[in-house]
Length: 147
Length: 82
Image (cartoon, rainbow over all chains, first blue to last red; front, side, top):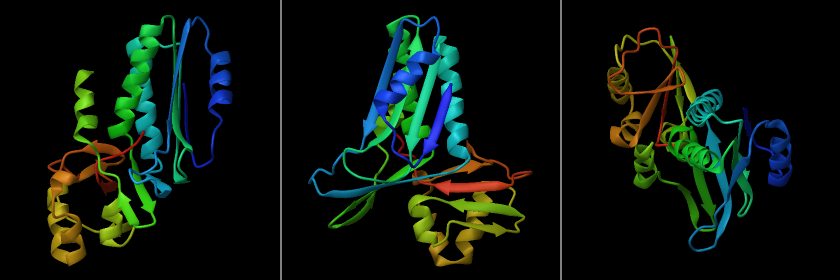
């Protein structure tokens, strides 16, 4: 299990390859990468991500421990950035490894659902016309009910 | 003495990221009431508790949770990770 909270960019290919070398007995690896989405108007200048140092690492670790136990994962990687990001910059990534793909897919979805509304990150969009905190979606909270 | 932390628009409305406070509040709700009585900027930040979350010593908690033994209280909007 590897949890990284960082401001630096990461290389999703290099991370996926490095992750693949650490998992034994796995037959499936699923990776998901979240990238900075432009605003609806296409005028996003910066996405500023704030987090709660200390609690962030704890929350991500707790979520990953749950996923590893529930799907008997051979490995689990979570990377989440904070700071000022530009459109299309990678924000975060999860990777899961399991004997079979169904567990790897399910665990990756579980990690993403919990990370959305239980990890202390907040996004602020900065555009030419001003700044706006991104509001949490009810759908994100509802997504937790399926687990 | 407890440490209070504010994030995102809660931090912006109150105007500072953290502060220390000597309080006799028994619960989070009592602490919020005490802060709101202090200054308008706190009342503005805590106007709608349904749009706020609280963490006690870095664990999510409810507003009726007791504060006994707690060292760090954080207030923030619903999280938007991922």
